[in-house]
Length: 506
Image (cartoon, rainbow, N blue to C red):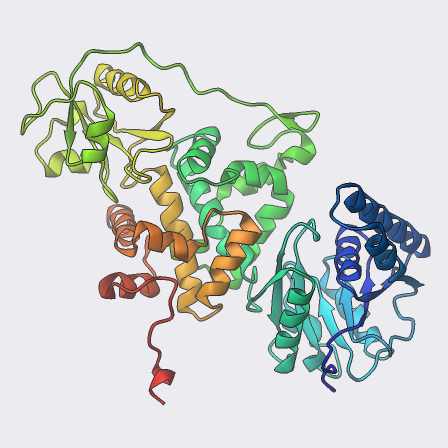
């Protein structure tokens, strides 16, 4: 097939006028492209043009467009109606129809007969194989994935996904087009979950594992995720927003697509809850309850009264400086509460390793240098009075405190290590460039940093210590560190850099 001319796409067709199709049309028209709108329901095309025009009107009212710009953008929207109308003048056709493989295949097979030789075909699929969709075409080299995120005008990320037989020039042309429209493209692999949904498994699958182990409840995990890690939304809030009717099949398909990689393992919890119809916001009940669409907020449990009991802190200046009434001796006195702050080690194991009284030893997560919400880890042998005194002491600092069951790493460490390890495995398999992994997750999932960048900020050696601690203690292969991580920790190389490859020698 012919390449686009030097100016790239000038006229495109968007097929499907639902939420995604309308958003893509709005973005493209605002970006200077002529947009043909098509839908099997002819009345839907006019409604879509009216909707997009109204959106331009809102942008004018907010001062984000001039009236002349809005008028010109609206004029670039052209109703076509029939998706299979002759399309020889279109450089690009974007499909945004039902997420069903056969539906998309039939559409593209028919489109190939009515479009020009240089027309590129793009699917906005969020989960289906681009290669599988293209397999029915006489020329599969002309089709690629162009995955926008909802809402399209606001979500700046776009995944450009070449199939196994996509022409080599098409991904670069689509990357340039997305940039021309003011969005941020990343090159994603045609593998289950592409890039964003694959990388996102690190957070939600580990959160579900934590829940399955009764380490903390959903609200506790979400509070830690927001206030200790800085996520905009906790993993269980996210699952409720997306809906388990969507999220659980995605988790299963990604796990199946990578042939049971333990790092991507789904949970029996979501299967059971999905079967029960506990989808989240859309049904009024999920991991939380919703009234008129608003989540019922749960308060932190009440904290015990302040205590004058002394505290002894093991090997943590940051925690020591935060607390009042801290003993300074080399060993704790017989009345002191003992607080430890290890990475990748349970409070109980730390107590045994250092000859500390287990019944008075509790853990405080050091991740984040004790600046946000504090996490107190309690093992089964803790004296309840010592635990209550430790909780009161931490609460007296003015910090919020979440109490969790003691495991080889506390909640925030486990969540972050899983996020970084899954991203490292993506980089290790050369499924995406480190830069694209960071950009995709930061923009697509709203994390404060890209996962590899986040690992660099905390330190690859620290992430590795957490994973090895979990792996050694549990034997669970989900915590097996990726080679990308172990090599860079050993060499002192950033996780976000490629390093030297065999091809660099030639």
